[in-house]
Image (cartoon, rainbow, N blue to C red; front, top):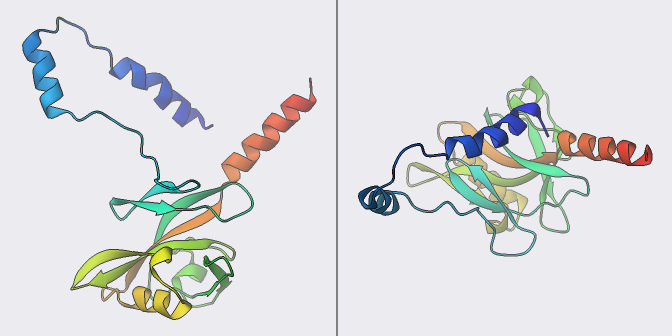
Length: 176
């Protein structure tokens, strides 16, 4: 866990402390205006939620190692080649020179999994998830539909932070 995340967790309870009297009018006005905070949970086992283009998108981790979903974006041409695996996931198989990926503006690597992409429907940006398409051609059409030539992607990447903390914990455990 990063120090920044730890300090956020430590400061959160302090920000919830109320100093002063709470009258019946205060309690009623708060409950009327503020909805209770409920953690986001996916409906099906194994699914997780990630923020993508301002909305929550379900995604199911498919990498063998610890991973995270990350929103990335780049201008066309993207300079990536991807294929559909046997399990239906879209895996980036090649970075092609001359595109956003090789220039470093589209932060993806070979082996990353594409879970969602931006598309354009009726002149408005929308989201197409990997579960909604059945082929590489359909995913490609969704990507190419972005008339502004800016493509956003929700990709699954290895989570180096998680892997490092696991190895750290393993090293600590071996010391005992």
